[in-house]
Length: 106
Image 1 (cartoon, rainbow, N blue to C red):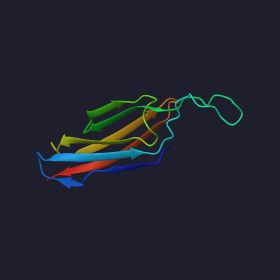
Image 2: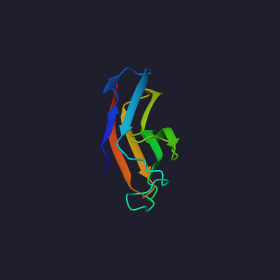
Image 3: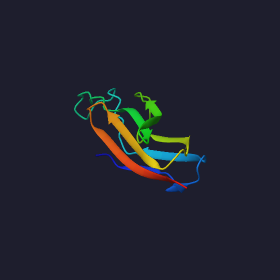
C-alpha cells in the first residue's frame, strides 16, 4: 500500500466550490532505466487515478511514464450534499491504493 496525503475540508456549505489536493508516494519507474547489473528495471507507474463523490465520478487522470515520482493532483468540485469521496490509484502491477474521506455539507 502506498502512502497518500489528501487535503479536503471536512465540512463545507452547500454549493461551495471545494478544493481537493492529493499526493501519493510512488516511484513511477518508466521502464527505461537499468539496474547496477545492466538489467532493465520493469516499468511500474500509476496509470490511472479516479475520484468518486457519493458514487459519481468527479475526476479521472490517465498517467504516462513522463509523470514524475510521487504524483500530486489538485482539483475542485461543487459540494452537492454530504457524501463519501473515494480516491483510487491503480499501477501497472494491478495494485490499487484506495482512500476514503467524508465530506459533510451543511
